Amino acid sequence: MRAPLSSFGPFSGPICGPIFGPVSGLALAAALLIGPFSGLVSSAALAEEVDKTSEAYQVANIVAASQEDGVYYTEDGVPTYSIKEDGTVDWLTYSGFRRYHSECHVCHGPEGEGSSYAPALKKSAIDLDYYSFVDVVTNGRTKVNAAENSVMPAFGTNANVMCYLNDIYVYLKARGMDAVPRGRPAKKEGKPDAIREAENACLGG
Ligand code: HEC
Image (tube, rainbow, N blue to C red; front, side):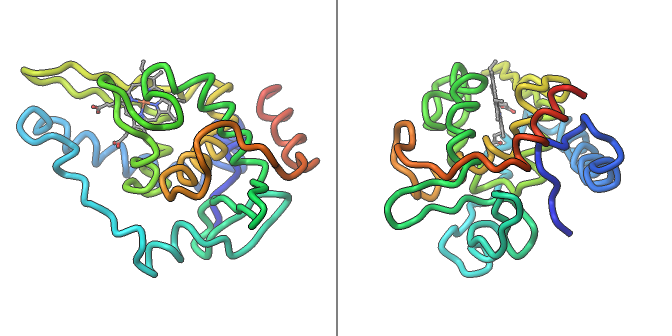
């Protein structure tokens, strides 16, 4: 099953509802289950370290197996980046760089490097699977214990985030794999018409 474009996020039920619905529902249920224990065991301790060099991980999450309308997908249908030998990045990676730095960096630090307040998302994009990543951004997450009161806001109704969620995810994954250097990508693929149309529909709807 192919993951939908972020542009079709929660803003277009017919396309995304059946796909996102059950998945984020499950993830949310899992979050609720973990909830009561978060004071005892930090969620970081629960998250398993991912071997990002393993073939299984690469095939499922990294290696672009197909391209449609300028968006690259892995064999598992998860959006991913594509970077040419001369450093030209796909549109989503470039767009994600910009969107990340307008919506997320204040808490998560520049270029996904993390801050004293919020985790390094370039690592999260590798350690969390795509659906968990989307779930946290959509529904938010709060961790409260004696030492900290840490809140990730829910962005589910913020079109400036939800319409660019795949972009942000793909950019952070490229950062996490060291596929792009820090800074604004110098060379990028042109913006595909299909992405422009989906973006307009998402922002307008
Ligand atoms: C107001 C500050 C703030 C902003 C803005 C913010 N975050 Fe967060 N985010 C946090 C905090 C704090 C956490 C850790 C929450 C916890 O401890 O459960 C977090 C956690 C996350 C996680 C889970 C990371 C992990 O490894 O488990 C993801 C994914 C995430 N944020 C994505 C985003 C994205 C994408 C944006 C921009 C659209 C964003 N955040 C904007 C504060 C913020």
